[in-house]
Image (cartoon, rainbow, N blue to C red; front, side):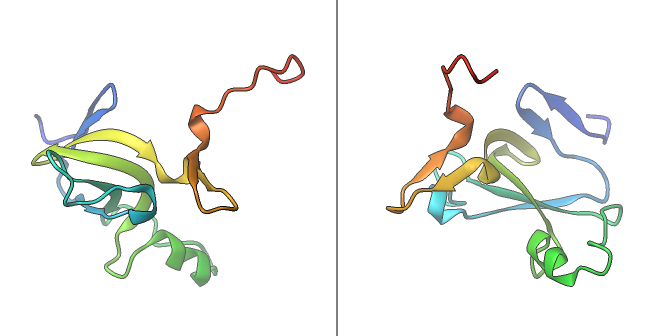
Length: 116
């Protein structure tokens, strides 16, 4: 790679200077860094060019950054190799039902003629 971002159909090669990333476990959805053959988890990134947070909204800023200053993207990724990630899911596209089951809303389809 030439040191920049490169995205190819659901895969990303992260080799940009100044961007650090890590995967964190999402146990409620069954994604773990210990998964085999590839670690999976929510992608968190850190860079000096990211927003510092919400203006005068520290409670919202605390929700989007972890304690180490990494931004929570909401993307579930699989780490195929060093700096090679593949998109798996979105943690924000999941609802928890009343009985505790998690359901991905991206897979829902509506066949009603009233919904376009």
